Image 1 (cartoon, rainbow, N blue to C red):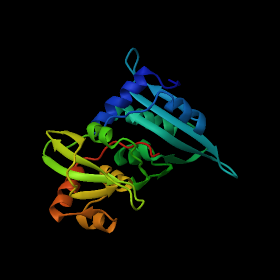
Image 2: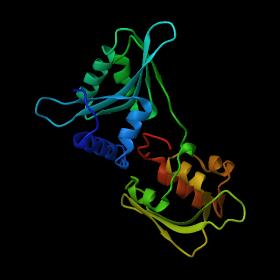
Image 3: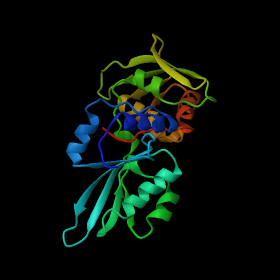
Image 4: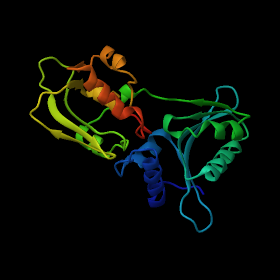
Length: 242
């Protein structure tokens, strides 16, 4: 079914994002702005009398000489069968399509692509964690998914990269699958810029060495190792960068 964003679509997005270990929080104007900015056409998929089970948004680009490319911006499917149906729809969407591009947050599992889009060239576009910008560190920590195996209490400092600026001091506490970041007077064991905090949050570092090479300041190797361990197991859902 062709149609725009609606309560059923937003409910599906929130549910699927939770499965990916983090909520999807967007302002009400987001989807209309995105559709207009990228000239998107959206489709909703559902069985007769059932709620929305899949949502697809795409744009069509004509090649300079002949043929057409599709760029998929959103690909949300509730289960394997729905994803297969959506890929089948893409496969017959336009007879002159040569390449299907998937944006970062729209890439289905590889085996689905291989089995359902084998006659097309398929490309993907991704962004690095350091392109993430976190405006509310406390809210981000509270809303992110955390492993139930992590039990961490660590003073950290988050500040600007500019010299002679005073960083904010927080106590990072992660336990039983939840996390919080509360102000504290204690000196941080790890000091991060706002950009470095975003990289850590997104799981961009896999070893203390890479974090130190990126300029993270520490009081002990154990503190840094504990901080990185907290984001090593589960990645947050980051369908867009901003």
